[in-house]
View 1 (tube, rainbow, N blue to C red):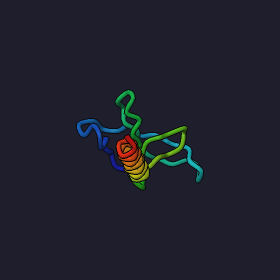
View 2: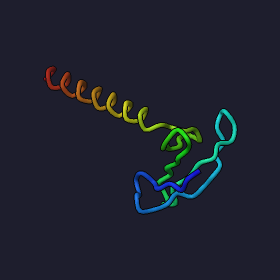
View 3: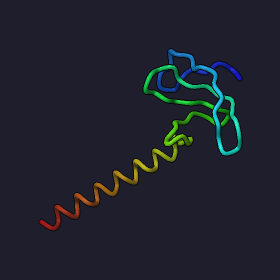
Amino acid sequence: MAQRSCDRHKNLQMIPSSLESSGGAVSGHVCPVPGCGRHHAEDGYFDLADGKPVREEKRLKEKITLAADEILRMLRAKAGT
């Protein structure tokens, strides 16, 4: 697998690593920046949450849904006052 740069820290090369997934061990890379936790495997970049891969697309959709819910809650509260 080719050497990768972290998509959040473009000037740093990621460190080769082996990750456990539901399908077995997966070869990939991990960002060396403490607290970043960014990983890369054959199917792209991802983070780990509770030891499981979380793809950015899912996280973005969750953030959009949470923001929309918060906006609706604020509008309803303002309309009720």
